[in-house]
Length: 319
Image (cartoon, rainbow, N blue to C red):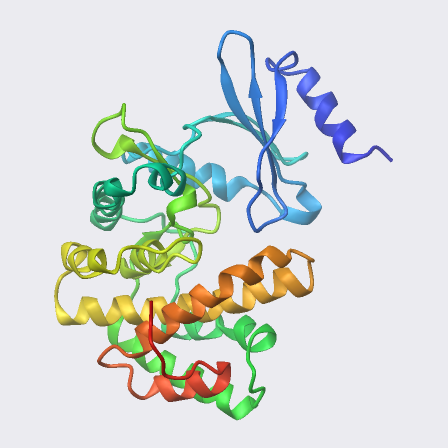
């Protein structure tokens, strides 16, 4: 049986990029691998290696990429795709993501985050694809099971059911009939800054194959409650107001942030303990701090003590 690297090399040999140099890239939390392919004339594309028996089909990624491009947003064009082998060659949107740019230019944070929110506003204005999973209140509550499995310090089944029941109630209030496309991992390391472009094209979009339908505050929570970098807390209120403004939208933002971060706690713990990716443990304190912040929001008084007991997130000073 051929090794995976041999399969990839043979496929590339039959492609227009056969003679291009291959450079390994840092991967994401999935089993997908990425390489940047370059030639001597300055050409650059991205190879996605998504082994089908591990990663499944990438048809959803291709579908969402085409949908986003049709809206005038900057998703990578699909230059070649072999669904059987799980290999794609993508347009390279650039090498400077939001996080990397802001390390050198911290004063640009409001400008970049305004541009990202503009993308979310555009997504909220346009119909979502009809064949995606919807994060109904029941689905949203079930999604935090991974948090209880891998990250809860109190393993009481009844406590877990109480948290999920309260979360279902909150989601039923703020998002009973979700209708907005969510890219799901909408954060600084998945957004490419492209200042030479105009309008929505300034923001390159990556990692959207798990897109689903939910409330527009979900991706805003992903952006502003980033597990990988601290966002200026003074930006949160104005950007939440810019997206939706009112009391109900603000409540939705906090509810989506809690739901998302309870799930992320479990995902990061599993990546560290099961998959040996221990670097994810370094991100957990920030995730817990985000939870502490959002659980203090008005409207979450019933769920807050339950989550604090289940995950040992006591009252304390937030960042």
